[in-house]
Amino acid sequence: MFVKIFKEEIKNSKIDLEVYIQKKGKCTFLYSLLYFLTCHGLHMVLLFRLGKIIYAIPVPVISHILKVAYRAIFFIFSTIYGISLNPVSKIGPGFYIGHYGGIFIRGEFGAYCSISQGVTFGSKGAGKSSGWPIVGNNVYVGAGAKVIGAISIGSDVIIGANAVVVKDIPENSIAVGIPAKHYLK
Image (cartoon, rainbow, N blue to C red):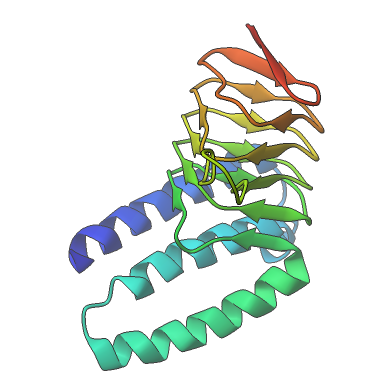
């Protein structure tokens, strides 16, 4: 189990890096170095992937020590960066966080999802829809959007800035408004 998770998270990390490199574009070595040193989203995604590996370690003593150290480091980075990727979330490869701050993520995400600043994915906390969102592949979420409850977001969806999504959104749609309404692309 550990080896499988280790290989999967290393593969996902490589794909995440490729996405960030592609978004950066061609530039000088110094600019590239500064970009990677100051890229909050990349740091948090890679730290999230490291956490998945640490939580899969089968040796209890080593696992517990590393989990405590990881949670402390994760807390510090989450606080400084304003980005919280809940460790129980499932995040596919190519996950991109384009901006700093106000991002809270809990749920399941497919491949190549892109998240802007001020975005929340989480539980409603009460009623039949308490639970977390399940998100398909190639989903873009605009700044300030909120996706709340045990809902499904299909693949190839765009969620507009400041949209509040509380109902399922089918594939190939654009969701906008409060509460969000969807329109086929």
